[in-house]
Length: 184
Image (cartoon, rainbow, N blue to C red; front, side, top):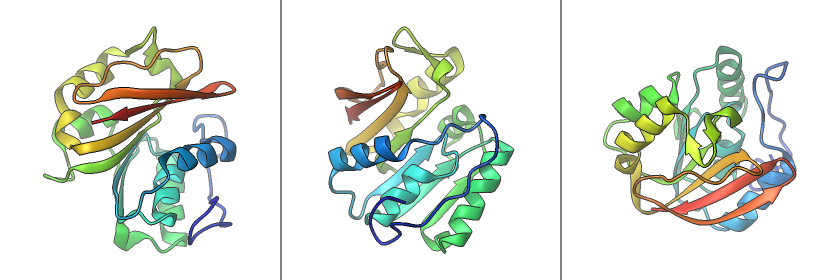
């Protein structure tokens, strides 16, 4: 963790390259841009190790909901939540993001802040891959609070795709990673 009440704590990550954790540099820049996350209800899609949602909790977010289906990443996410004693302020859904957006396993909850870090191959030419595009088109606006913020991590050089119910409010690039910021 970079800052907040959990600052300096280390997260476990699965071995290999299947999970691409957001670098400390990008995470620090992201939270500098977001500024205040106090009391936010956070949805972390493609959560991986949970680094973004956990960082938000460390900086004052009220609750983080994680969606991750990869078994090694899910194992690391659960270990991180347990090690940091965050079970009371987190929910973990072991689903594909497309399924989670279609079924809303978290119930009627709406989120103030959404992190979305899909595999870079899911965004090409400013368009989501077919399955993700359908899920975003049908279920995404129903999870956003009015005025919600969405942060989409994608490969540099790719344009941010359209997200129903949100508008792009800027993109920042850090090496091979871009962060596109949307407002709902």
